[in-house]
Image (cartoon, rainbow, N blue to C red):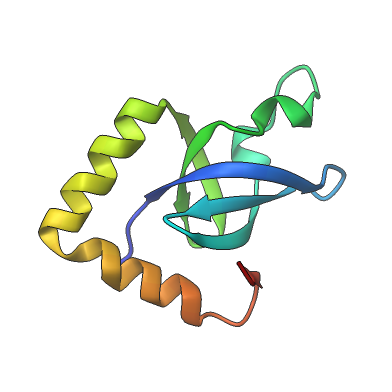
Length: 97
């Protein structure tokens, strides 16, 4: 199963390419930010925000409380470890911690 998993945007890698670095429970991964692009063009305003990540794309912005609740539920369901392992094992976009 492929889920949207909460991650925190920790850096803008390339604003022109709409790429950012997201931390998902300790796994850092480069993702496409096109779906959450800021209307005013201030990419740095996304740093620190939480997003749902799905197959390398930040799909939507969420608040920290929602992100934490979702991570807790996924952990309870046993899905979190499976998704983190899948993210850590992909060759494209993986960044060392």
